[in-house]
Image 1 (cartoon, helix red, strand yellow):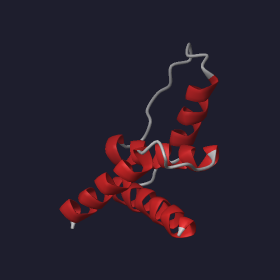
Image 2 (tube, rainbow, N blue to C red; image 1 turned 90 degrees about the vertical axis):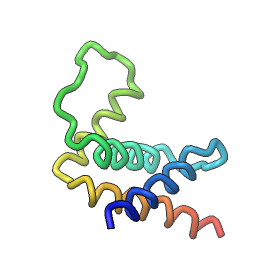
Image 3 (cartoon, helix red, strand yellow; image 1 turned 30 degrees about the vertical axis):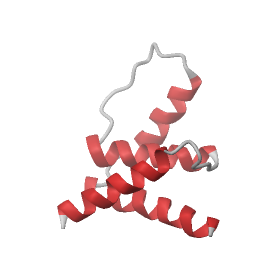
Length: 89
C-alpha cells in the first residue's frame, strides 16, 4: 500500500512540476503544503528574518496542513492533481 501510494505521489508530483501545468496560485499553495506535509511532516519553525512574501505564503500554507498525517497529505495531493487533470479534459 505504501509503495503504491508513494508511486502515485511521485507521478502526481511529476505532473504538477511540469511548466505547462498551470493552476491558480491558491491551488499551487495547497499542493506545496500537502507535498511538504507528505514528505516532511508538520512545519516546526519559521525563519522570521525571511521577508520574502512568497515564502511567507508558502509557510502559512504548510502550517495550515499541520496535523494532517503523511498518508492523508499524499492522498490529498494526488486527489488535487487528479481533479485538475479531469477538469482539463
